[in-house]
Image (cartoon, rainbow, N blue to C red; front, side, top):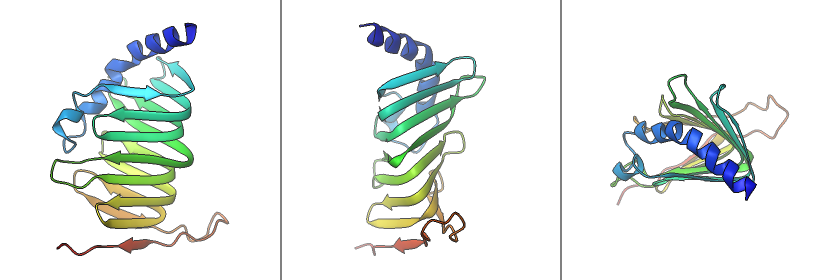
Length: 175
């Protein structure tokens, strides 16, 4: 019971900042901005002064068509209360969102996902993979610019001792 009260209180303090997340994605489905944000996790650490909320343990965050999962999700906001960045980490963190009614669902994976909400850019890092409809992009790092629908992918050059993650792309011709 105490855990539920703490979660409700934390969401009450954080919800106004999280709701600004919905106002940033102009290309997301229209209903996404007004949809409630739901976060489920094993633990929450809220630092209102620092403007951060850290969720750990099988984190599942949803708002409208957007879904974000990871073992740890950190939400950072500006002094004005706007969500500026969302970091998700885990063995295989995941993000998906439908950019517009006529666009295919965009899905991304990586050991780290950084969503720069003010820039409208998603970074997929380490074993990065992005699917836009039938097209796929993989590499050590894949950046996806939501507004311009631009993809940039890079290999790691084997600098960290891991197996080289060369850039690969599969484009499916339109029918």
